[in-house]
Image (cartoon, rainbow, N blue to C red; front, side, top):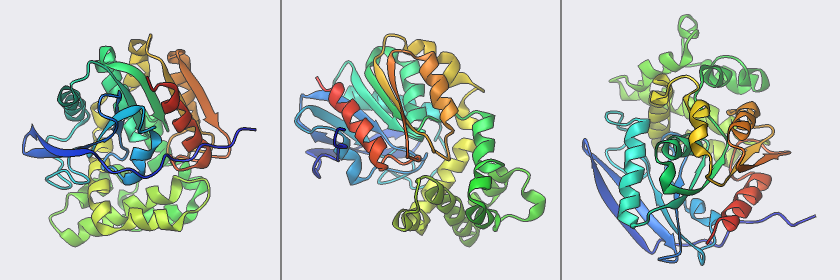
Length: 316
């Protein structure tokens, strides 16, 4: 049995910058690896999660030139937690601006969770720009997927965490929790926003790993992180991420000819494995890896192993 792959060593960017993308938004970007090596772009999750140092470590730095960026309104991008002019299609356009900045014709596109959603939206819009596509924790923002996580489904596996998630919302509003949270996350009262943001974000931090990870839950519940994470994620889901029902699977035909990898934890709570399996059937060029003994997070050992093997496969 092969030894599971670990992260590449910690690495610092060789270049960083900020790009004005319009509507008052300025996004932070960084590049790591070897200038001129295989170009790649890393798309973080959330929406609203931002990039972290470990995200650089999925790629062999001697074989890749990776661009990472904080999507609108989160991480080191400004204005922080801003919802205006912040949609899926704004972000797709931002990725193209960044590709032009890098100066490559095509690149490897890597995204997990919401990053996988964004990667699929980008690849289906600009298939000619994608030399390979690596997606993890597949989420296509259908009504069934949103209901599974915010109405009935995961609530049955995490009844204790679900009760805490419900706590800020009066019973009369619990028929539509996404809308109820939106009212609070856009409240003019900062304390109302804070309470709602921490409850929303903590629910996610609690349910994304197979086994409990208190430090991760604490990170998700930290007030500053939760402000952007909860506001932006809720904003996107309230608007169905500006996608038509079933759009990403319907348009997966546009991925034909693109090599790739679909990586998904068998026990992924936020993102049911059925969606990943449906993508596999719609995009047969991609290798399909359903990881046993794994939840949603990229840090799950089996998922990390599959992701690093995939980046190695598409380097050069």
